[in-house]
Image (cartoon, rainbow over all chains, first blue to last red; front, side):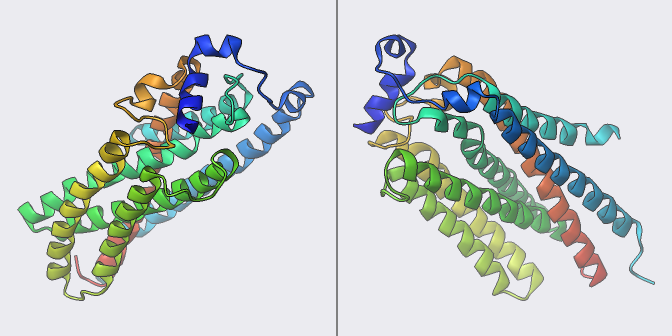
Amino acid sequence: MLFMLLSQAITLSAQETAPKVQMAENFYGEGKIYIVIAVMTIIFVGLIIYMIRLERKIKQLEQKDFRN
Amino acid sequence: MLKHWWKALGALLVLYGIIYGLAMNVPKLDILNETIRNVFFHVPMWFTMTVLFVISVYYAIMYLAKNDLKYDIWSSQLIKTGLYFGCLGMLTGMLWARSTWGAFWSNDPKQVMTLLSMLIYFAYVVLRTSITDLEKRARISAVFNVFAFALMIPLIWILPRLTESLHPGTGGDNPAFGKMAPELSIVFRPVAIGWILMGLWIATLFIRTEIIKYKKQELL
């Protein structure tokens, strides 16, 4: 039942006649979504920097000879 | 620097998913509302898990053919990373289901079968810890891996599509390559590739750490 509703909504033709679907229009209209995007970008870039640093450390360990 | 290009590509594609996936205009879908943006995050978790498991079973077969412990390390660490992504997919999916299907868990065929195949892979991890002999552990793991994989593909990717399911993609439709609205799928595909590359990157960190551990204990 739910799936039928869903697949109907996905077809573009159904979209034109579909009743008004509630969207976060104010959130987008006031531009505040960009704050969320900026926060997520900072966190993601921070994690990537962490991973690059971690990989460098692993590389250093790989070059070290443990059999000494 | 040149051999790291795919990691940068993966990070950029995921970043594109975060920025454009949230900023773009999405189709107004009943029930889903703004949560349709979750396809850029929830679905790639499963794609990544599956890709990691596919590569893992390849190395399992390589181990059985060549008897080199390195293949066992690659295979097992790929499964561990894949399970991480599976857990993330499960948690995000349950949260998404709460707001769209009304409950965290509705015993949907895809939910049940995915949980089942994840439990099989968890059994793989538990099985490994219970065997101390390295050669024996590697061989049993590799055989178990092949069987787990042979169950995972029908359980997650085939059987749920043949039955009634809350998930999209029943009745032979592939939601990723057919039924998804074109303005979504054009963003979804590169973002999914980005997540897969991120998963591979994380897996390589797991593998390299494990190899260092083996070398330190003079096992390799």
